[in-house]
Image (cartoon, rainbow, N blue to C red; front, side, top):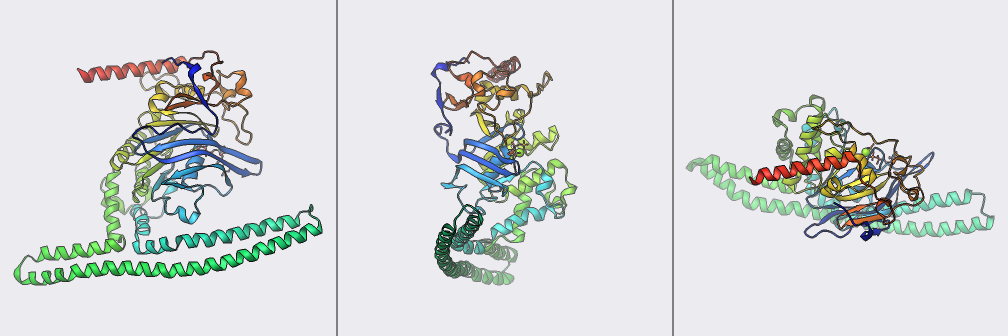
Length: 505
Ligand SMILES: Nc1ncnc2c1ncn2[C@@H]1O[C@H](COP(=O)(O)OP(=O)(O)OP(=O)(O)O)[C@@H](O)[C@H]1O
Ligand SMILES: [Mg+2]
């Protein structure tokens, strides 16, 4: 498809991914996210202004070479960045809350329950000396104690406030010490700093005292709430239990014992499940999930250790663990890289099946565009900490516009023709010193003079398709994608047409 480049709109960073398409709902919105790491050599600019939306029930694939910032982005969403990381800017909106702003304590509510994650290497996410069954049920039992959860939810805000105030005070203390140990301050200034700090410190100590008081009041309230919930469950339980027990007793004489007894047991189970997830219930659910992720003979497998499983089966266990909390969003960071090709295809199929069955949204990270083809609804191509092209799977596979996307597409080995894999020349840039202009220019045979001076804006090709390359500017010379890419597109379009034709016959 030829495009009238003169008509293209441009969007400066931060790029804002356009309007939400009709009928779509964004579950996760990342805007202008920038992350740096403090290292001995300096600041590593790992993520430099990334924006995307994950729509409900869709799969968004993030594709890019090693070091492009894919894992850092997903770790930020999960709240598991290394302590040396710093969020320079941006927001991650999930259910109306900005995940970059919520406190660690509160993250427990979301991490692993509403947003699940599957990592590249299944061995490192499993405990080698714990039976897999226990690893699956453990999460459920921990998350499943409803009485405890009521207590935790009640005290949560006060707990966070107290911890935050403590943190503010200790930060001020560090700042103050640094200030007075510096040589630049005169005695007078030091005295002033001391007075200021003392005033601040006594104000904060007052506040912390109040926080502690508020917290202990909340603890009391939490205990009362939890106890009353338990009592309510018990009461309802007894109300049903007595008649059932009587019925069971009567059935000893009149017959139908097993039926009445069954009812009694079921009622007890209902009670227990209202209060907490019991080990037995957790096991029942674990076996069901193991079956759901395609583990045969789950009863036997339940009591085995990770080393008794193959790589693919282990990754299924990791997926099962992520599913126990019934997450809305599943983030998969290169979940199949450690697996061989056939097993890889099976895991991809599993993720696709689970996504449909559970109406989950999936963020799928990979360095291999070939893997993306059967998974993605939408694709974000990342290079050197930025999204350089963003669009629907069709946009990216049939109308790719960025030279980096072309390079990625050229490097996918062709299944039919076994066409030679064209490696991308050069290496990704060192993010201690992000290149000026277009970061890919040094490795691109399409680079223009301006690429080395000025960063390209995002060009809006269609309302769903964006690319950041000067080639889309009206002043740029006409550039066409590499033959290997256009030929493949032609072939797959022809195949698709043939398939459609076959279907209509
Ligand atoms: N803890 C850290 N300290 C310093 N730099 C880091 C840290 N973690 C990541 N980085 C840097 O951030 C950049 C992005 O890393 P990231 O792990 O997100 O890459 P990736 O796209 O996931 O690559 P891969 O395909 O290899 O997993 C890299 O330059 C990396 O060196
Ligand atoms: Mg990674």
